[in-house]
Image 1 (tube, rainbow, N blue to C red):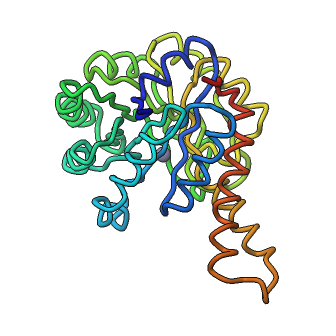
Image 2: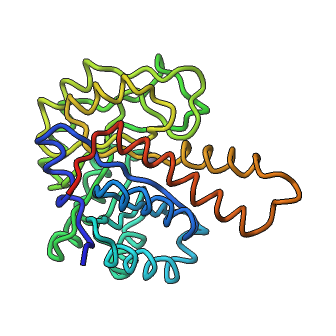
Length: 277
Ligand SMILES: [Zn+2]
């Protein structure tokens, strides 16, 4: 009933200056924690499944569970492929019932990125499935160096969106995946130029570790999808560590993971001002 597409939740977000969190997970327990938070706050949510070798090997098991959970939910739930590495991976997720696809060819030259992204858009558009793609490159936090960083070029961004027909653009504005080496430094002038050049919703990857004040500013400027994973996993791990030895078993561990994912997702929903339905 409530399987939603990326456009269903992001277009209003960009117009009304709030963001919807996109939360990665690797097990059903983590997914349920994220959904608990969305249900409790009555807000839309994006469930992200990463294109990892392990995840894709189990896609046939995970995809029906994600789609079923989305349909059962009382809030709009987007089932999204995060960082699709190939056209083939995108195809598999489309066939498995995903309602949103990201193709990431951002490490390739501009023309190649355009060509592959167009191919995915051509597959998805006829089925009404929105596509996210990335320009510039959001690298890993462990290699983070804001002085030597591949920012999204605002002019190229406009050209890329027009040439590909994508629905959401992941930008590189000083953000990085995982734990940041040093402090994240958002390049606001670059973001401002991108916002002026591109009217589709913008996406920030590597949201874990970015200070709250930066988030507020980024969202008010027009970023409407924010990807979070590391912080959720850190919260769950901290809760696991707090379980006393004689109480640690598979039940208490499962509960700690679900509650950890829920608690940190709740915080992000509040911070992003995700609007209730
Ligand atoms: Zn990412």
